[in-house]
Length: 350
Image (cartoon, rainbow, N blue to C red; front, side):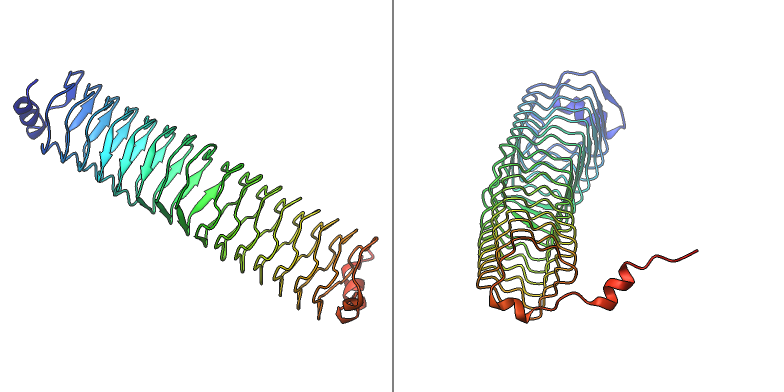
């Protein structure tokens, strides 16, 4: 088919099925509302083309130029975008399912409210892009390059960021669930009010990062680095922080309820008004920290070291102590509250 034949077919509502449009120049074409099924558009020029509200199924865009094109409100399923160029492409409110974006080159995208389900982004470059209110469910993302992008109010479920490039990435109110960040460096990043529930972040480097009000509930943070990070009012409930380093971190008003911080190093950290209720802190280092008005009720403090710590009004209700080093600051703490302990151990008689 020629360019004119394609334009006429779309304008008259004709479905394009099993046609070969590879290499065709469709730059600036109005293809809005069209239906494309099993169409070959490999290497086609679709720069500034309008595909708004189109339906695209099993269509091959491999190597196509989609720069400046708009897919807004389109529905795309089982299509291929490998090695395509998508600079300044508009994907606003577009739905993509089971599509392949491996090695695609995306730059300055518009993708507010875009939805991607079971898509392949391995080796894709999504640079300098505002990813706003989007959703990525069950997508593969190994080796993904997000250099300079901002992830805002976006959900990523089950993503794998192994070998991903996250230079200059900013997370703002993002929701990362059950995702893999093992060994990733996010040092110095702005990651505010974001959720990493159930994520595997073993060995992640978050030193110097802004983690204000982040949620790490149930996350695996074994050996993670938080040195110098600001994580005020953050949630580490049920998190695994064994052997983590949190030296000089600002963790004021954060919650470590039911967390395991065994052998973690909190040296010189700000732990004012933190809550470590039921936390396992065995072997943790709290040297020089401020635990002013913190609550460590029922925590396991076996072999912990609090040398030089500010323990003024630190609540040590029913804690487990064994070879724990406090020093003279122990006298400033609040010990076991006997009436509370009696109430906690009350067993009704029937």
